[in-house]
Length: 196
Picture (cartoon, rainbow, N blue to C red):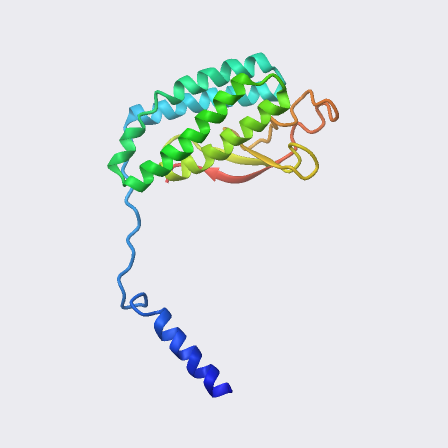
């Protein structure tokens, strides 16, 4: 029985490494090209509107949230995504997919009246922003991917992008109906988004 297992293990090892071992071809990393100043400035401008929207959520000011969401959508349209085609088709396609999620959820914020529903859309904007920055070879100022473990209840977390490492929570904010301002700094930095 032990001999059979040893032979089976050896055969599996030989076939699982066939062509992919030390002698096989190595997969080359994807070469990412630098972006134009126009691209980088457009991304920075859109993110400034996102940060303003986040600050409006901290204050629970739905009028300002909608104003900044509208500006954010407008500035997203100025990002020349076609520039990403000079990298690979897969980078462009992944970026466009994330970008569409960002835009559709930002547009949904404009149709909402309840701040909690707006915050849920904001969390989806954020969830699409994070992979967008990972895919596009982000070249701007350092940003922080932050998490609130109880954004929508004790076990319902949400993330957002911040321009500072200090946690200022857009989900619980300064005027939460239950916690007031006591949970304003609830959360943690999960990752840093920075130029490579």
